[in-house]
Amino acid sequence: MTDVVITGFGAITPLGNTAPSTWQALLDGRSGVRRIEADWVEDLPVQIAGRVDADLSPWISRVEARRMDRVSQLALVAAHEAWADAGLKLGEDNQIDPERLGVSVGSGIGGLITTLDQWDVQREKGLRRVSPFTVPMLMANAPAAHVGLLVNAKAGVHAPVSACASSNEAIALGANMLRLDEADVVVVGGSESVIHAMPIVAFAQMQALSRRNDEPERASRPWDIDRDGFVIGEGAVMLVMETLASAKARGARIYGTLAGAGISADSHDIVQPEPTGAGQLSAMVKALRNAGLAPSDIKHINAHGTSTVQGDVTEAKSIARALGSSVDDALVTSTKSMTGHLLGGAGALETFATVMALRNRVSPPTINLDHEEPDLGIQIAGNVSHPLPDGPLAALNNSFGFGGHNVALALTNDNMTE
Image: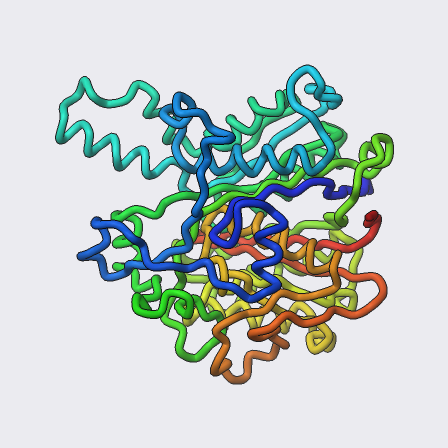
């Protein structure tokens, strides 16, 4: 099977405006969750989120910004960084054949802020004031399309939409493009930006969000007895992936290897996970089989771990079943404790964190783990970073989405170069 390696990262997240700054914040156990400083939150039951704090003007001109929802703007910023990090150039200096270059970028919701804002414009200012760019701004494939335009990708531009599993599904699809010889290089990842009154209220009405407004940095607390829901985050993470042959031919630095992927569906409920975790287990087993790995090879897991009461327990049990007698050898973490939940962008962020954990042999912590839920059956990296063992390393990264979408990625430090 064709080796798929990762040669570039770009990130703009609640923790940092670059991939290195985001990784350092994860290692330090810092929280990116803050109180939303805006008048529109005053009457909301939830007033906290993981927001990106960045000036996007170095990458996005004022004219471009008026024609792109924030979800696409964030995707482009991350793509710029990932492309440069991979040692590649744009425009006429781009050495990648466009016909062998693909894109796969997921978003769970797409340009929702544009949708809501333009509806307000129509109601308050009239039909003629609605932007003619509304549709290309709000469509869920817009982030993928803009990234494709940036790098001049012609092998295919894909936009999986599977709720909070979207970007991990996008990564899996990109890997398939490489393995099926449809491309030599792909830009993959995810983006999300829906910090707005309506989605916050809607999630709150579902009793899904933490209401710890007075302690925002302590609100996201996976596997802690006192957890009361997840925290919405925004951001984008992009990866450049390519065949090992392509990376070697151009002397690219290799961060690690995407060894395999597993996808399943619960077919149980539009929101709740199947309570036994059978679908989650299936995705992990498929990922291991696809990668040619045994459960005993897994030393680290970046879990979906959203900080919801039912979701955390279900995932812990499915991880324990997937790893069996080897479960005590795998260190599990949830970086959502620091970033909040980037929804469709979460998987890409956590894939980045997983690869960096393998590369640096250290697991980021799960912060705010003060009173761990009993009898979970997994070993959680709580509150501080933890070392990973010497030798070959393999890890899983889980993403699960509303609708019963399950995606697990298997990653290794094989082929890694400095």
